Each structure stands twice: as C-alpha cells, then as structure tokens.
Length: 217
Image 1 (cartoon, helix red, strand yellow):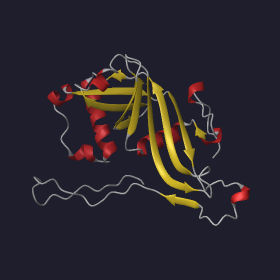
Image 2 (tube, helix red, strand yellow):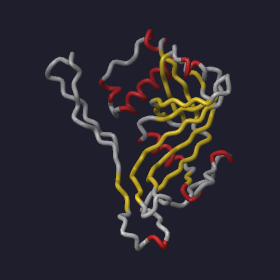
Image 3 (cartoon, one colour):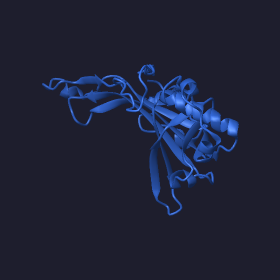
C-alpha cells in the first residue's frame, strides 16, 4: 500500500514501514467508524501512563467518548491535557514460514489532541445518539434518549480529528527467499467480527423482535 497524503505533524508520521501509512481523512474516518472500541491514553498527574478501552463515535471532524461523571479516569482529563486515542481493526493472521516474518493484517488510527468537556445539552444529546448508533446503527431511533439527570451523571469528551494518521497492513506474508522451500504452510487466515444469535434480556416482554446487526465486517 502506498502512503496517502502527508502527515499533519512529525509525530504522526509512520516511520517503521512508512509505505503502510495513510494520512487522508477518508481512510482515517472509515477506520474510526468501523472500529467498535478505542483506547484512550494519557499521563497522570503522578507521571504514570494510563490507557483505558472505551466506546467512541465520530461526528464530522470530532470524536466523542463518554463515561461516568464519577470516573476518576475521565475526570482527570477535564483540564484538557493531551491524550492519544487509538483504534484498531484486526483483519487476519499472517502466517509466514518463519516466526520472524509472521504478522497480522490490520487497520489502525492514532489521534493526538486535547479533549474538551461537552457541556452544551444539544451537543450532549448528539454525542449520546452518535455513540448509540456507533454500537448498533439505527439504535438511536429505537432506544430512549438520556434524561437530564442521566446527562448530569455522564461526562462526555470531544476530541478534534486534526492530528491523526492511519497504519494499514494487507496481503500475504513476505518470506525470505531461502525459506520458500520449507515444508511449512504460509498464507493468511482472515478474521472478522460477526454477530451471534441475540440473547434476550430475562425481563423482556414477548413479541419484540431483536434489532438487525448490520455493521460492515
């Protein structure tokens, strides 16, 4: 894969195997929209690195993440300190004839920035709906929106997608020529996320059909 676009900053430049880097927004947005979770990293006041998995959603040029207003993790970010958000989609296991060249096919995005607290009620509702639809497209039309009390118990952070890059690996293994005659199977085992059979809540009234899981795989 050829590098697409130019990195917005030096720290987003892909240096290890730069041909896998992509900096164009359509590529970055598509990965963020498909990845079900992200990981949010920052450095605490004590100088300790911390990374948490969380749900995200993209609306235009903004990424939203949310959690409990009582969460020490998210409360620590209210001051706008810098974070690094990453999202990864695993597409396959790349099995080479050697362990050195074995790898994985993946699509990933890294975003740097300083998040802001979402205080406007309309934006809070927009972000809450976007996160619900990110988990399951169309869910925002089915489920009850949050009440004012629930919004008060929720902390939503917004991160601008202005400093970001993608890194992607595709294709078969790249074995050394000397290994090609080894009696070892080589190739790719594709992986994808598939929805299982819906498991209704024990207190669900009869006659309600489950939603259709239509996320791209």
